[in-house]
Image: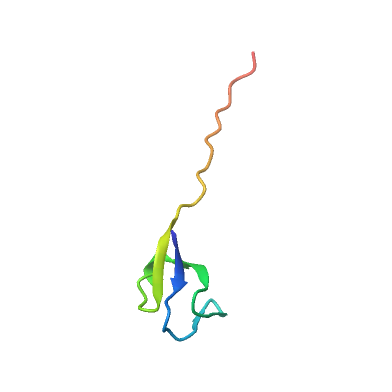
Length: 59
């Protein structure tokens, strides 16, 4: 699962997945990386639910 985070004020720029994020930037990180001291957690992102499809036999 992923978490939406923001780089906190007073933090140095953060590099994540070869991208540079400055103070105030919001982006998605994996849950295990969300507890970094430079991140303010905004919320978890739930993956889209898969629709269950049922097939009915043709009569």
